[in-house]
Image (spheres, rainbow, N blue to C red):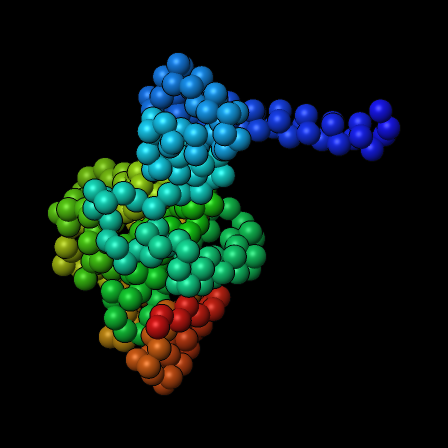
Length: 296
């Protein structure tokens, strides 16, 4: 046998072994999840070899699993998050989760990459405030979708609702608005633990909490800074939702504690003069403006 023929044979053997190794990994994962039995695993391998198809396709042809089962296993192998199922309480406007192939989700991932390169790689436990001149809902949606993209990388991500006047995040994540949250934590009313979002892997949320009569004083207090530092110690990325800056100083205070902010701008809505005033007010208290997120 000449060298070329031997090389082709070796390549073929390697490919077959690699395919078998992949099949074994997928099979073990499905078996550990209770989706197939050991005997069913053997049946799938037999069909795979007979029809020269992928392990997942063979399992689907036999009717032993559903496509969602295969997608979940592939998601675990490639370290990405599957879209939530229909029974989820998550708001469908969380496009980074529900429509990961959309232009909006891709734009959010591009923003994530910029932030990783320009900010989050410069230290540990850094927090970023999202600020805007108007529309609390738009700021919250941007904050939530951005946080989801970080969580999809497997980074431990914390999303905090610091809009104590008009809370938003509990609506997006299907939480009870009466649950304790940031205000309760800062006021030391009760122990507050970040809420894990099972559908989104590495994402945790701290809601705004009980309506407080003095939100600005709470946010400006040393207790807020201390609690934020305590929370940050357990996460790689902290994204903070803030109220609009058009009438309140709350967002300015929150951004000053974080040290950095991302400006949320709405196409055909945000006014240049208002944005200029907002940027100047943030720079005046030493906030580093990292860029702009444009919502269409």
